[in-house]
Amino acid sequence: MPRSLSILSRSVVTLPPAGIVLAALVLLQPLLLPGSTQAQQTGDPVVEVRDGVRYIHNRSPRWGDHPQVRLEFVRRIGDLETADEHFLLFRPSDVVRDAEGNLYVLDSGNHRIQKYGPDGTWQATLTGQGAGPGEVNSPFSLNLAPDGNLHVCDLGNQRVQVFTTAGDPVRSIRMGLEGGKRFTNFRMRSTGEYLARTAPAMYPNEDVAAVPLLLVFDTECMPTRNVGVGRLEDYGDFATTVFMSVHTFDRDEQDNLYLDYAYQNRIEKYAPEGRLLWQADRPLEFRVEMSPQSIEEVVHVSNGAAVDGRGRLWVLTATRIPTMEELEAQEETSELQSMIEIFDGDGTLLGRLTDQAFAHIPIIPPVATPAMGVIRIFDDRLYLVDMLGRMCVFEYRIVEGG
Image (cartoon, rainbow, N blue to C red):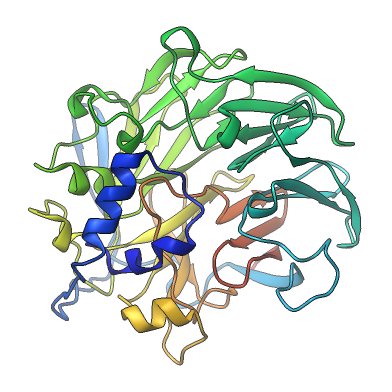
């Protein structure tokens, strides 16, 4: 099993009873991987085309050792040692930024949305815990719609809640009605539709070969069409299939969709109508089994993906397999633990950054359904959400030119 499952008790993920039992069982089987390293190659990507789909095998970053962008630290929001309740976050899972530069942090463990000004000062608490209008219960994902309203996946109440940026309730939309499906993570398309994932863990009785990677839901939370149907694979047992299907995703300004798989060396881009355009991999510092025979062979690769205004994909990628003790401690280490990889819109690996807040702290891998808020990008700002370690949000300015 992925050795990070030892931290399951601290996870914000809500699983069905079968998923909880499954995760508890695999906790007893720590993963011991050999210290093999995937061969590091240099040069331009090797590209093959099959059935109109481009397969990009990256060999090294195009920018080499001199990235053409850098991250400039701006601020940190959230402190576990503070006496100010407005900055004492508990399991934050997402963040969005409006046109005026205000930040909205989804403070999931406290069942609220915290609003901060462009300078990081607290402005308001927009929601509280409950099942009534303007209340949420274990919210999981936050997005800013084209009309400027906030849309929240109110997971505990099985609905999507819509608020103004002042916190006024606009409407509540029930999920899963009339044969519809529930979802956890979502992004807003330019049309106002929801692009969302429904993990196999939520529907264990469905045929994996028929499960779409993502679904498009209309404004009433009813599914209208599939994205990537049949791209999931059955690995022989439910646990392995669930973990190998875990992915994070984002969309660009043209509604193209990018998927990054948490337990595979695999990144994909889909056209707005759901057609696969390309699939990419890259050299890593550890071996990744792409066809595992059991959960013991599953390895955590990445956790979080976001697209910037230039159509580049930013992925938070692990650089090594941490020990269980390192994962539990969540303390800074002398060894590099993660990096941010940048890909262009055609799947080519451009560069790697190792100066972000998470660089020397082991990434806690996702369990069945990851929070989407690990990386978000709005204009020239990149946000890293530390959900389970320091429970805060790091804000960076993206500076072009290195």
